[in-house]
Length: 160
Image 1: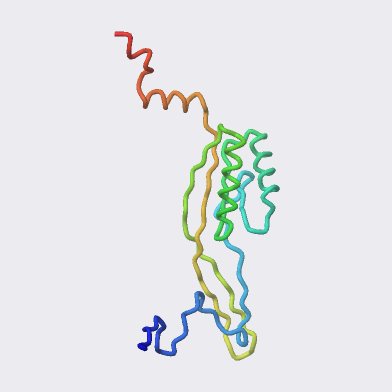
Image 2: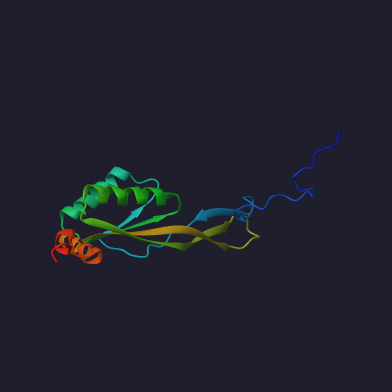
């Protein structure tokens, strides 16, 4: 019997780790909070620990107070929750539409020395982020634009 060729790498190299972190014996790894690009009463930051129901209630309260625009920021694993939040808002209030913008943000980690003979270090990494703009539109203006772009109505076109 012939042996099947193996897909494994025959050298004894380890698979590279996703993050090149220092060993825990020499450094203590601490993640810094990500920077907030905007701050305001209509700016909402979604994370995986915040209640989706609570965020939705906050958005609905802003809408009730006649807020024209709500901006939702979500980072990494919370992107799905942010999208669901925006879709729930537009489902309940048809006069609101969504505009999205994806970007990458730099996250900074501190590697604090656990022993005296090593230095303090900083590690940078990147994470995907999403900015969702939920804004109010005038339904009558939107209907007029659709009518203009599709042309005159069929009833008007047949009156020749």
